[in-house]
Length: 174
Image (cartoon, rainbow, N blue to C red):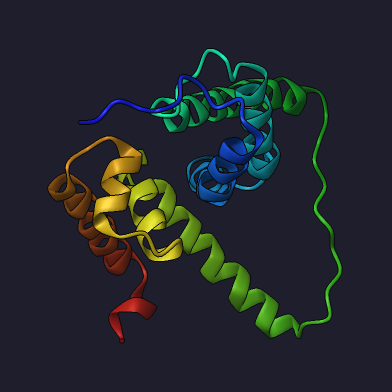
């Protein structure tokens, strides 16, 4: 493997290219792993800020790994904080919509079953499945993001799909 021409990523053009390449991917990864309640887009942005602050210490080859590690740690810290907040306050959802009551009920029931089915998956299966089916990543890309082989990623994706299909009868009819 050839040596990198650059020792760090402090150049604005290199950093911008890195941002363009990984920002959405990182945000999606955080969303799939932790959900939307913890603002995964913000945590992805914060990870890029930390990368810029430490740009002299991070080589281009390590930038992606650094971003994912920092973003994951930021989300874990947010989870810990959220647990403390939930002890002291109750979160009230919005109670208004323009949809028919029947549609809302059916949507809520399916969403509840779908979330329950997703939650029943192992973390690795859920992340692999959502990266592949929701984000459109190839099996090779999923494997790289998760740090596993392509075969392991394929197995996790198919295993998750099979479990979801068994739990949600709407998917069995197709």
